[in-house]
Image (cartoon, rainbow, N blue to C red; front, side, top):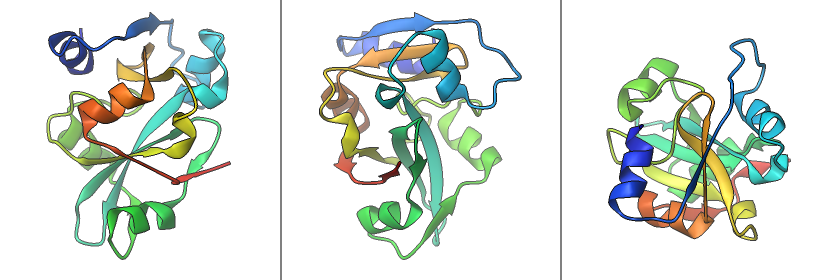
Length: 156
């Protein structure tokens, strides 16, 4: 079990766990998950961390088929500017290793933003806290348990 799955179990949130054999040589962990689990890539989301000019870490959940729009994230967060977070800082704040960072069950409660493209799906897939482990859940359940806002932060 991971902290993400422990949290979902504790709050009795509806979810399904999917695992696959992770290839350490995979270029993209998110696309690897979509491929190995035979999922629609636009339904699989990656968890990225960005840092504001004041050093606040922000969590962005965007489709694996796109990228994060840093300007849109800064605007959504009400800060001047953001850049991708230092990997070591991201791992320290979340308690997860890169490639397995889940938006759920992080060590520190960070402000979280989910791309609006998640909302039309009945369920989406995010990291369950370990490479090779995904959790399927409703976007509203993810937002509720991360206290996230839905905003336009993804780029195709």
